[in-house]
Image (cartoon, rainbow, N blue to C red; front, side):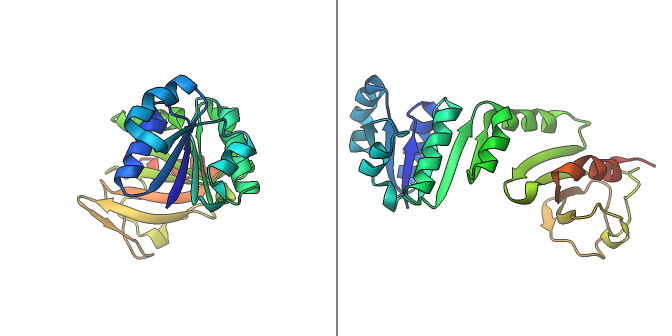
Length: 220
């Protein structure tokens, strides 16, 4: 694939290196001349000087044939503009944007960014998962239909322990997609019984997370 990466900070630099090692064609665009000069010694023609928020720069970078645009500058506004120009003017198939302010995530989704990477949200999820008694964890937002993927641990005294999925009155538009049991992961059916210690992966509407949490995490 041909991948354009915008922003030669630590994220952009290591991302570009890893993509190159995997055999992809990569072009890294950076508007700071000093960074470009410093990194050219290692990356050569892979890094170029330019402002990717300008259509001319993306045109010169061959955006019309790019498969993916990844904007990882430190400025949310720049990342949004880069992705919008790439998708709307050059029809780039996939856009990935870094978001520093979590409040901007909803705007990015509404404006059609395909993948939103929020370091703050990711760190918060890691914190949630590191808390021993945290039995319900929000894993991921899905762009389409305002869905979320969540994980719940079934405790030994949970009201749904030893019930089959078909017996559980799940919220509307909620699906249990997978169950982790020990070292195994299974795709459940209506007859699958939830056991204490199971890690349940569910897809639910974002506005139904609290209802699902109460259902799966309430104890007898």
